[in-house]
Length: 140
Image: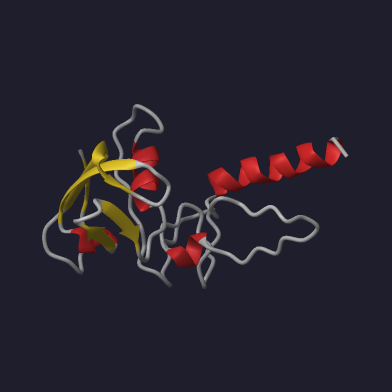
């Protein structure tokens, strides 16, 4: 299981892909520990995971940890803060590459000229939506 720690909360949170909890993207998870670490809301009756401050955080962390074989540690700065490193641009009000907070991930989107709406606003889902719009244009 992957583990998450957060200095403002006691304990730890452990999670992995599974079938105990479902999130809004129909992804399944096994979760144990302090869900406040990632500001998750767990609806026990429905076995539903709701993301509060970190949209799709379980998938993002799991994907990053599984991206290649090298052992790794993932660090995320508090919202409004950045890690400073040589050669890396600092974006003072968010928008950090690899940011997990909703301020880094969510943006406004204007859609015109179609009645179609994306199923979700995750980047991974928007790609399919945009490509589908172009495919429909070619068939006109």
